[in-house]
Amino acid sequence: LTMLPHAASLSAGNVLSAKLHGRLRPQQMMALGLGVAALAVPLIALCFDLRAPRVTAYVAMALFGGGTALSVPPMISTVLDQVEAELAGVASGLLNALRQSGGLLGVAVAGGAATLAAHLSTALWIMTGVTCAAYLTGTLLSMLAVKLRREN
Image (tube, rainbow, N blue to C red; front, side):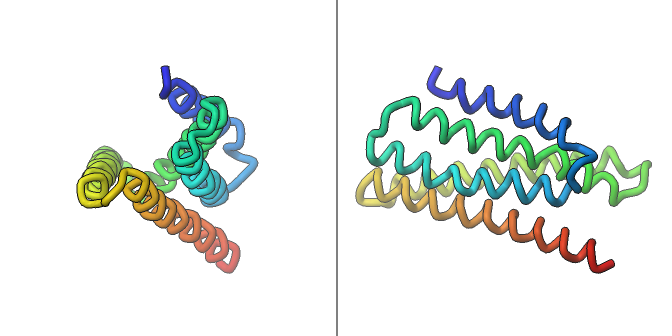
């Protein structure tokens, strides 16, 4: 039940992504989604660290899930648009394998932080920093892609 807002926001983010398709460039959708998710991460950490009311944490989790979901469909289509049709299956498989590997790496880093940090709160903020850095890097790269596309 605790993860329901996050799961529901993933579905809502995919629906929103479909609605925005054609109105925004894929790079803009990726930047918007990753930016929202990057802002949501410290909000989630604050909610947990300050023991905020559950509804506040649920809103932050929904922002994270929705932002992430908004960025995934345009990312997939952008990657697949770059390869020849006969290689689309290989590219799709590689993309999914890399996404899953990133998730595994994140879990491993979180486990390491939780094990090595003196307090669970410290581990929470270490992971918040790592996650924010990853999402902000994706946001900046997407914004750079928009700028480069405008120049060409």
